[in-house]
Length: 469
Image (cartoon, rainbow, N blue to C red; front, side, top):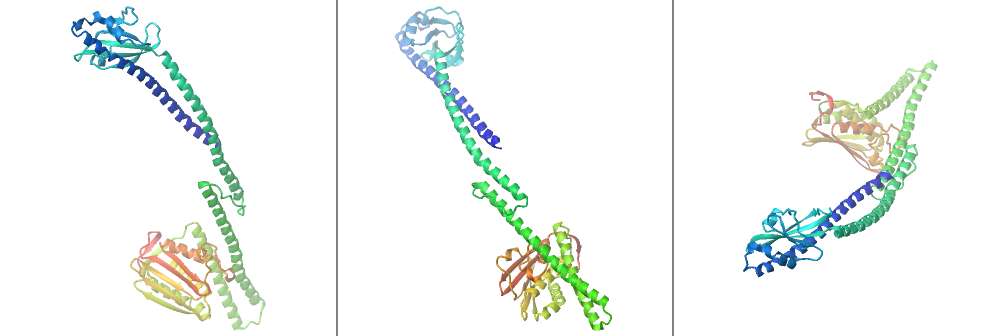
């Protein structure tokens, strides 16, 4: 990666330098060529003075005065030719008769000056040729052709280019050093993060990455550390869950085994004792069934296999049904339950799953409430949804535990028993109904759980039954 970063930086810089060098070359070349041509063209304008001198003569016979014209417009370092409109060379500043024809540009015949680079027919070197018309009364009588060797100009241009190339090379070296430093500043932290992440990935979640890296790398380190914290927390919750569920399974199994051995080994058990034993066996068996159902529901949650069978139902009736079903447990702690209903509470939902949610929450309210207290069940029908609030006067939940009580395996008090799955399963069921669960709690003052269910959730069910319960 380090090489790629350096190569990318250098490729961009080299391409930019090449572009700049090309622009410098053509810019300098144009500057010198245009400068020479402008000088010749400006000098040629003085030819008008000679035309005035001969205005009383027959202008059509200007070639008779060609020597005077050439002598008047000569320029040091340049060869001047007096050229006719047809391109024949009338007179040259070299004094040598030239038989070849000059290629006069069309724009010169229209009275405009121009220049171009040509090749000398004898020396084969490049020359700059400037064509300037001789005008009288708006007519082009002849053309002054200035030509100058580009040898010195070319040498000057290449001197400038050599200097530009040297500067470009120095810039390239500086950029390479900067790229190397920059690549190290990027690649080295990435290598460190990769190394520490691999070490962390080998179940060494107690180790942490440095977070002092700048910008996105620092964010990445903090994210990985947060991930490690969450994995540790989940792993700890899983271990505590295994410990808790093992205890929850062992307790009823121990009771069942004890009573079975008692019944099998005893010959003089009274009818009352037998009934007591059977009652305990039934209760412990139900307890085991409840735990197993929680585990099955948890498995379905993990594999997204919970299917809703929706039907029209009254949440008010469902709450009252749950209250009657669980009333015995509440009365054992001398807890009163008050139900309040307001508005239309009909929704489309899975009756058995919503009943499971209400039973779980009501059971928690009874379990964590103080004896001789009151539990309030409130069902409120709104235009678009129905809310169910279960409020107890119990031990409450700590502020640091409140954000996590709906998570899988989480238990705010492991001494109270339970699998830590009930609220997580309830939250998932409510989510499948497009609803939400909100908790408010205060230590030793109680907890309030509000379930909000829309009247027409999205189609997440496999079956729909249009029966009103």
